[in-house]
Length: 256
Image 1 (cartoon, rainbow, N blue to C red):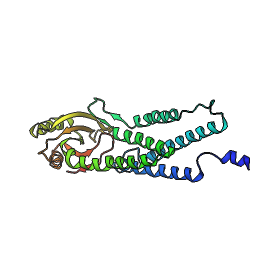
Image 2 (cartoon, rainbow, N blue to C red):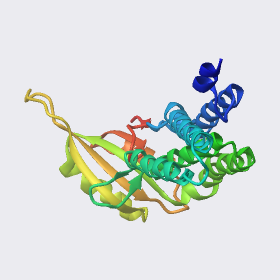
Image 3 (cartoon, rainbow, N blue to C red):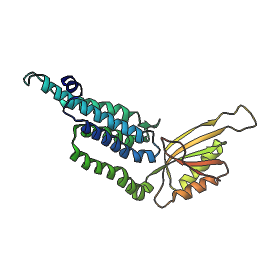
Image 4 (tube, rainbow, N blue to C red):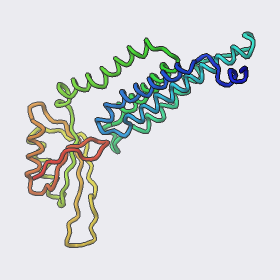
């Protein structure tokens, strides 16, 4: 019986561990929902695993503290719970850094919100593992407000004043690019970033080589974005035009 107590005993009971693991997975999934809906690589599974891993690390730290106090004299025990927590926070930074993408010309950076949600998910896991449920409840409410309510406010009141990312497919860029630049000048649309690459390389001479031109545009408040997309789609040299994001594949197609 003493041997069983030695193996399975500890400061955390079975139901404590079960509750904290379940809460970590649930909260990680809730934080990752918004990223999942936005089609980002780090979605519910990633956030749930990060939160769960941090919670497990906190529980291990707590058990280590308990073991030192029980098994060693108090004057010989050296316990520093902050070391493991600081290591987790630093380690999560590497995961978040992998989600950040910067354009070649440095004009825009994307993935920062995903990196921030992964980092805060890890911090929540640490709090869950330590059993700080009052902090968890208040912090979770603040996270949900930030990721959902603020995003809704941004989309409704701010996003239309900002910039848009579009992709244009053409087989004659020498004719299409001056036409597009003339249109942007007339509409007072500012080009903040531009990139043009070969979309397909055809060895067959009967098929034209297509080019993919990417524009990051700052559109004036009085110019509807849908009108801009329709005007571009009507141009003779434009085959396809998409609304997209710098980090994802094309999302909206405006056919001619």
